[in-house]
Length: 339
Ligand SMILES: Cc1cc2nc3c(=O)[nH]c(=O)nc-3n(C[C@H](O)[C@H](O)[C@H](O)COP(=O)(O)O)c2cc1C
Image 1 (cartoon, rainbow, N blue to C red):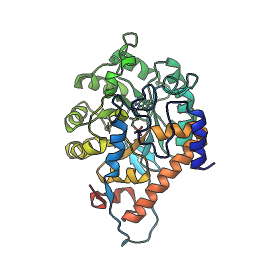
Image 2 (tube, rainbow, N blue to C red):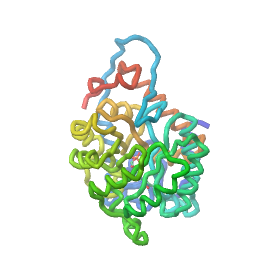
Image 3 (cartoon, helix red, strand yellow):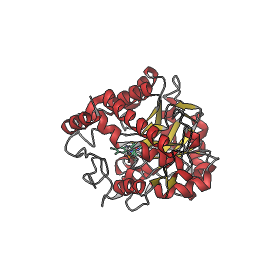
């Protein structure tokens, strides 16, 4: 299989809400929610995508012709390149009613294990999603990172306790899901905003490196750091929780200026190539997440489809590093891009 075949297969399997566009830019799906789109009026995903395109790369081939090394370390995790596949809580609700998000998590973990990276997985309302993700984690070198929705602290801590026999290498809470209607109505355990004290309690309970997802300003990044976050994920949930927020690439510089060195900085939202990963690193991020194209690759080829996609991103990153004068991840800096 090649990537074009992955896309062709995905068009047959993914259901009516996603058009599997040649580039996943959030335009054709716009405000399809349920589906892969953004919250009405639906510009969020496309804004994220466009922001990366505005950043340009500076070629520098006046460097030693030595091999490229994309490996990196994050919170003690070794990554063969700085990417984590992003969490998705439910696919049955968004694509076809019989789709199984636990199978998506299993295939992602298998692919991430084989490619030496990690898979972050979402908080389905169905308890069996967690049980099966725990089994997948055990089968695949513990390469899964649970990302809990902002239910009550009591509920999140109950979920954390499910992992006692197979602790993941990091745990995360996604704070911006607070507004998702289907979580608010979840049997009294559902979504809500969090205080710094709430997050401190969760961090203490997690015991593992603690990641806060859904940070979109220096102000909220500083709150997450005060709560003890070992890493933050700059994310607007792909435009799915509020429209007219800035693009993630637009807020990254102010967040890097505020918290770099005090917390690791991850970012997602419209990252569609190894070139975009390079740009994010040059702006000060430590790693990136990609969501929708990974899901499309799953529909197009299961584990193999995801591996083909991950190989594509890694090879584009290698090429960009080669052309911009970086030989290892630590070489990448802001002089290599034009913002
Ligand atoms: C169908 C769908 C479901 C998602 N479910 C979750 C979730 O359960 N938890 C979460 O933290 N983020 C969730 N997200 C957000 C993604 O993890 C990610 O932050 C966002 O899509 C931006 O990345 P992208 O532009 O590469 O898609 C979901 C996104 C989509 C499209």
